[in-house]
Image (cartoon, rainbow, N blue to C red):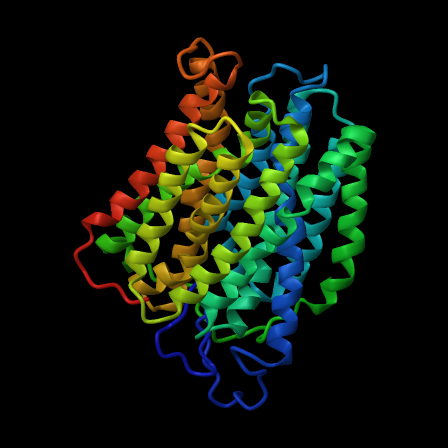
Length: 432
């Protein structure tokens, strides 16, 4: 969801122009209404998106209890929730564009569905039930309520959209700095049934009162065209970005899924594993905001994208791969969080580099989400397959089972390198 290079104060992603109403509309790129909405969206992003991104703690816990122990597909619960949230974007965004007057109703349907998924998951005795509730129900509810909020943000933030999206992306990092530690403590003391119910209650209490603040700049435009400009599909630059984004999605999620288990395998304990996730989230806050902010400036967007993917790859292979103690893992999570997470914050400007037409920008944003979602959904079964494939490899380490993660580390690093190399074929000057 990106913006034109020279937007007026009345040009929005809904493809709307109101020359006779500009004096009655709230200002863009600032002002009380714009910041009120952005901060409310920040809280929703932090809490409801931050929760599935902290699934690594649940995965480590589920792998130790008798009901789910030794099941290689535990990770599918987390990747289902986050993957659906990505994959559903190309479907939900055109619906929002066609029926913007129903955005508030969609929020009032999707938000409770997320809560219901957690409550239902607390009664699960089988992994398939957890996949359906904590995974699929939660992810479906998320796409129904979250993308209407993003469309409202687009209406208020145009020239500074990179900054706005960088701030929103960093929200899950703010949450992730605390959420893994809190979830781990709750799981250890109360178990997953009480923890899921408690999280559901907390989400209702913390986000419910903010729903009245979710108001778009334009409630409805009867003259808006529901058609989408798909001409960007003929542009090489779009497909280059899409390929880079797909490779990024293929590797990006493995550290958050496996770091807690990896930390346990080298004798650090589950507490330090949760601490590593928290440090990575803190680093993500800075990385996503800074990369989003820089993408609004006159810098080479191509250079920023390559730096994001390549440094994350080097950190994976150079710090995570050989790590057998806490210190190199700390270096890894700080570098990986900052550079790897910064990639997503630049989606808005990737879209505007390909096409400045509002409907095309929306469609591209949805397809970028879908591309990353493909990698996210595949992370679960790919990770399970890689662990099984490496389980007999004793040459990677001596004295413990850390060697089974060799293939996961290599797959992550290679995927990120391919993401950076995909952009090496671009020979055009990109505008940041």
